[in-house]
Image (cartoon, rainbow, N blue to C red; front, top):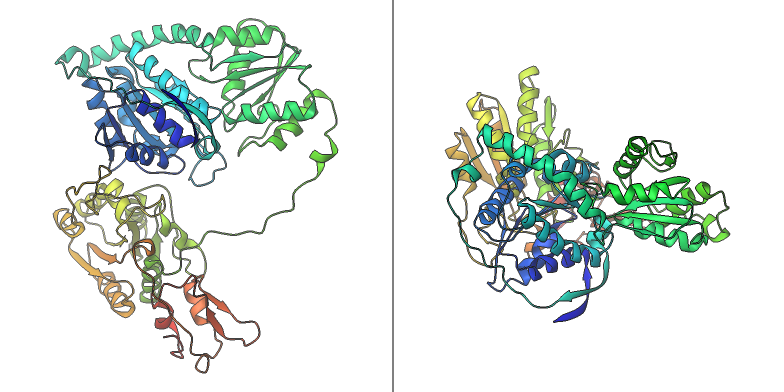
Length: 597
């Protein structure tokens, strides 16, 4: 039974998998993909299995086993998570699957909340896996069902590449409101199929190369790729940029002059459809986010088929090389391309917004941990290697406590490299509890095995905070709503051979300072676990300033950077914003006048 629902793009993707009879959903949280798995979990009701895996590699491998058994599976991650999953991904492209598998890798143009702007469409070509690129939430819903059909027809995983504005945009989506399970037939032993021997890989590689042009022809006929209009000015686009192009053409009144090529399956590229489009245009402007994937394909086809058409885009400076597109930016490039003036309404630029850098929440235990290490290392040569998570914000002043940040888990190993070149430096690694389980344990094992001097600061706030508060192995709660095996951080570190482990509450400030000093004096790998819950898990208290004691030195503001502390411009005293304060007491520990209670 069909219904119209107002859904976020991520909810639509989950709905598409549910209504296709998904049997297992796995993933690792990361904006902009997180809500896909969360939405699937809310609707599960025991009908299918859902898990937050320890990392993206584990998520893909769990899904692979389920797909080998004939179940339809969905794997969710963001674009940098695909790097972590790339080892099984590349091999799985050769081995193939039985039950349909859709791998969602959500790209983040901007980037809005990521380390990179990498483009998953390149991974599709690299791994030779089919890729769908939705332009809207409703199309994302439809593409999931189509992706399962392609997956099972060709026994291959399929990539779905939504971008941030599709993931977090909302629209009315017509959905099939019934769950019809896709019944798996179970795992059938077949070593020629499931064991990746070199000879098998060679034969499978040939099979993959033979299917690519077949898929390209099939995609030329699919509804996600189409030509609109019959003007001699061509516009090629894909993903959310299609929505921007449609709006820009309408505002500029160019509907009679342009034809639009919409690409919903960037790999394999729909060559026949694209050649038809090129042959009916004089010149083409390409509007796409991130890399010139569509543009490169069109340039290649012009050469391959000897078509006298000029292609304009990122290579020619007619569209931006990085960042997001908008309706306004597309209008500007399209007006220039068509040789017309922008309408007056489009020439008005919005005023610049004030810069609002992200900060640690008021009462965040990470602030206390950073400040304790800062106090403990005053006057000493120390490097503070950071990681991906809320605690990355410790780089901002006044804390200024994150000297490096590369990728998840790299804090532990970056510190080891610095130690080998500068052994007189005290090297700290800051890592969160969730990140430790995702990708930190290997680095700790490496440090112990290679006899490195390192202070590991595990910032344990009992949650995966930056991506919205998901559980992890240290919390013991699963996405199926059950109590799983809660893993003890201390026992893990002991098992890895860490020589000294101390657990402290970072809000017991001076105790934490002393624990850090003690660890810094020792040889080998030492760990200080700063354990205090995220502010989202606790009932807030309140602090207050005793006005007749406050001397207006602002040391509490200048040292902690807590957003709940502000200066009264009239009285020249510090005041506490009661709506932000959690009563953590950190400011009271640094106040020289003992004016905060």
